[in-house]
Figure 1 (cartoon, rainbow, N blue to C red):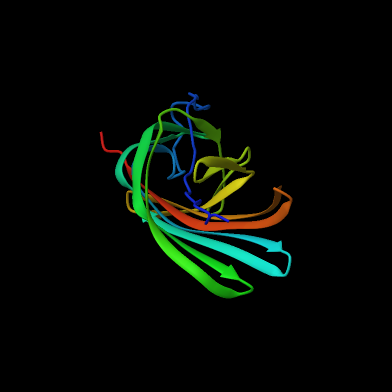
Figure 2 (cartoon, helix red, strand yellow):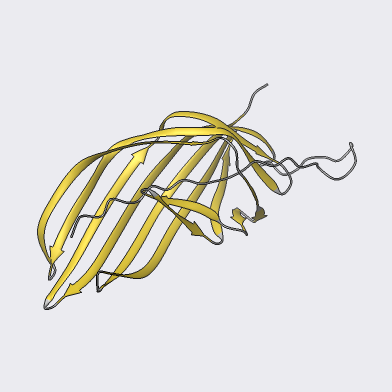
Length: 200
């Protein structure tokens, strides 16, 4: 079995226009509203795949941690819609893999992982409850070359001056059958996405 090489977490947000209801004299009290410049994503991701082949129980684990570089673009956050404006970034890191047979480490390796992401136009509805932001129609979490929909997606919101931080916690437990073997997959991760309020 080949080691699994997945786990990139990214938030997919945005691209429709909306108009704020109410009079021109309304006072904006929600600090999340406005235009935000993308700073970075810092992620810690893990995945595990298990299968039983006769008397052998095999488990393959992969870990990918990274901080994005070449970060550009941002968000426009209105009353109920988040709009992405040319958000892009680069990941340059190492994937660590470990293979176990009947609970004993059989081999391990480390390989470079380099990827770039560019999502110039997408949009989603959102809802704020306390210090959490949720996307009722789901967000998208990237696991290597595939995109797995999380429905709904929730992140913790925090502010520090002009800095906005969204912290996502991801957990996906699934099974699949390939070539007659049943696999149990667990994918987990934490991503901290940071933005800075745009200065005109």
